[in-house]
Image (tube, rainbow over all chains, first blue to last red; front, side):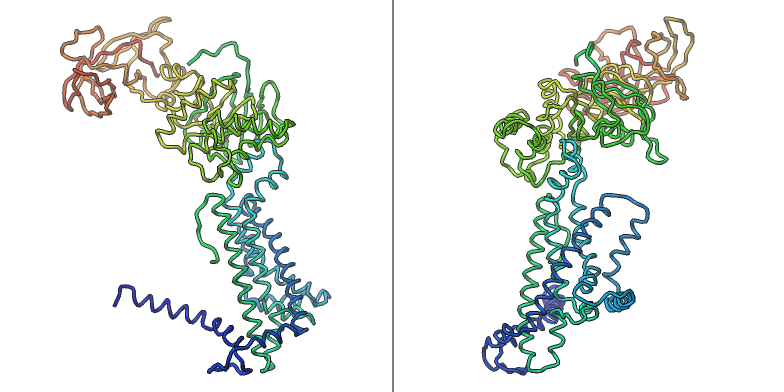
Length: 269
Length: 367
């Protein structure tokens, strides 16, 4: 046996286990049968056609888009402030505060969702897309901070000082020096938080009220066996969209590193 | 090295104090830097030299005292309105801009026309030897080129004072020596006051008109390079600048114009009172001398008035120079001696006996 052959087999099985289900999505999305089973019974695009004229789906997609865009802008904005504070300033209790902000990354999401639901009902805020957005911002902000901290960290403090030294003030320095240099990080954060919000289910399920988002819509459709291939078609589109967005995000993240002359130390892709 | 007299003061420190919490970074700095001078702040890391430089730039506030630039108190003047520009240790070249955009960064509010500014950028690049580099991406430059861009970017604004924070420390030895000469040339050309922060004593000696040696937040000595080397004010300064030998000595008698001493190997001799280092330390009295003030006499050379007998303990060959550690007869420790390697003068072996010529005029008395 080749050296390391055991590990190669392990890696292959591992990847197969991860990606085989995703490969099944497009296969059955184009399969001409209502039942999800082999053997396949011919090529069709009719599930996509049904999808196209499904009004509820369009409402859910629109809701998801509203929540996703609001979430990505809000969490990235909060992320910029937090990342800037955590990388540039020293203040008492900094470690604890940043830790608290990052906590939603590891807390069970269902606990967060239930807690938020109880709180919102308790203070009388009606469930809507707004409350879903609140939940998503809570989940997405830690990701924003992680991405943006890396961007701000790679920013040499003397660049700011050089800008002051050459006559600029705090605002023009932010505009002329800091923003262009962290922009790849900001774009990366916007895209990744949007992607997370787009397929987030638990928060959306608990906090949406009557306004469903895409994942909630998908879940509800699984009650009807005949709409399963349609969901497969929708799933195919979502997977492609996610991969595209993450690739663009990663492209910008790497470009940011190359621009500031640093070397790559990890990332999402 | 030129004698700097009759020039007006450019920078004046008046009892400048700086505290970081419990840490006392600057302990009463009082000094003046003259206009058009190449001035160095020299000291080991943590001595406060960079902090002092940053108080001139306005990046560091002071706890008490005053920093004056060209007669004006800088207390309420922020960094972006001071007549100073800085070359940072990391160069701080904006990586998202081209070389020309970097150099022209400070001209944004300049009322001149776009064409005139572009011309100024070209001239500035020309001055630092980067002709034709304007369109290059800044992040693709080498260390030496970044350094030049940083210089051009600062000098294009024609500041009253150019601040250089260890600008050569990131360069390799050859490049560093080349840039030292170029910086001196540039300073003479533009006539701007240069203030250099460095921990490299050789660099400071090579480049400066005057040097302030700093230890623990205080200026230990402020002098021109030659005085600093020949007449260090304390053992600490003597040890920091070059190599200084210390030979224990005893004061036999002292008058207003003569101090009689006795030292092992040297015997009895006398020095003038002005050869005495200013500060009295806790350590026992010693005479200090530089390695090149001792000379090994070869067999064909006639005896001289001041001659000591010694044994060679160590030989370090440098090509142009040889360093010997020699033990003067009766001395408790070895002394370092340097000899230029010239044809016909062999390098001595370890254990060899040698006649060593010395002179009382080259001694510094530490007590």
